[in-house]
Image (cartoon, rainbow, N blue to C red; front, side, top):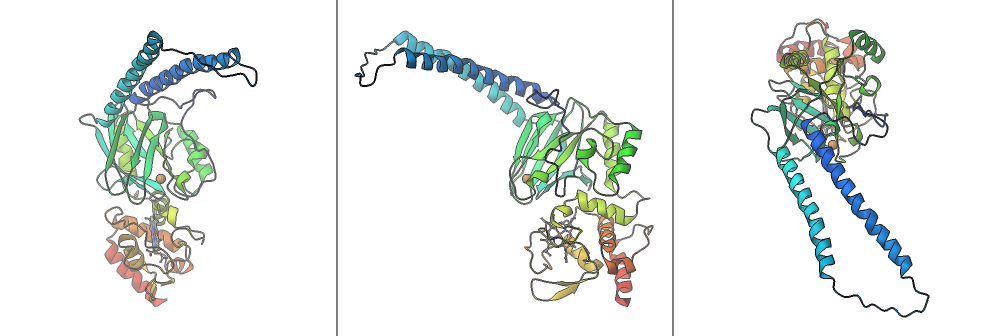
Length: 391
Ligand code: HEC
Ligand SMILES: [Cu+2]
């Protein structure tokens, strides 16, 4: 699992060819160039280091003098030697610079027509924006086509790193940054039987990527994680990158994650949103305190606010807490919750409320039928509040 605390140190999905390989599989157009340049520079350094260190030791022993001997030097200028050791290495330096600069400029120049995906980094997770209100923690892209990430942070400096693509870029609050890459290895899909078995083993909780090594849709994945220390759960700031072979395949996935399936009860969808949209990073469901209050028993309880007043946590309060978190701040907590205005649909918020009800005794008493049609939050909250008042 990614969004919540993680007890596995290395949830790697990336494939290493063998134990002795330094880097994961090369899965983007940058990867080969990157590795070739890296190894060229490394071996060049080794090539210089060995004779230099060798001479150092050789001369140290060769010219060793007994203790107390007078130090004397009669070294003179040797123009050809000095020219040789200055000019020869400078060719290597210039070559390193030229290849390095070319590669850097290539990475900073997004090809025309690249597919643009929005990325928001937050403590502690990722929100990938596919347009049309579709936001998901996983990065799904197209094979052999350039993808551009338009990136921003909602709190501190994070950094995107996709080792298999050899792609890495900081995400800085207060400004947009971008990166691009072109994947050239597609994500394989596991068999339906394997997927079913994994789903059964996984149960209802958040999908365990470490355990299964493929996504809940059955795709093998590459890793994306934060590589700029950003606080307590930095190490859990990881997600999966899936490379689709065809546009149709990618679009089918986007469609599938874009809204609550009609046959899914709101509370189940709400739980999914809770783990996928970053709530879990700040709110526990077992009563323990994280950055924000736990959701356990929240619904229907009386909340003490920072301004000394209290409020009953009904549908309206929860709805407003999600859309306008700074309006009513719970006493004893910093006002750091980001607003989800425009990012969660009314049905999404309905579903989260339904999920919160399952975590609270007073919620279970007034639980709404799960097959209730998708309605506007406003009307629904109204009726629900009435039921609530009858208790
Ligand atoms: C960066 C941390 C953070 C994230 C992410 C976050 N919250 Fe919060 N949330 C807080 C904090 C801190 C508070 C308490 C202070 C306040 O009321 O603003 C809070 C308060 C709340 C409250 C009022 C709770 C109460 O006890 O009265 C609700 C409801 C809520 N959040 C829902 C959500 C939902 C739903 C999400 C995900 C879609 C979410 N939050 C994501 C930090 C966060
Ligand atoms: Cu981070």
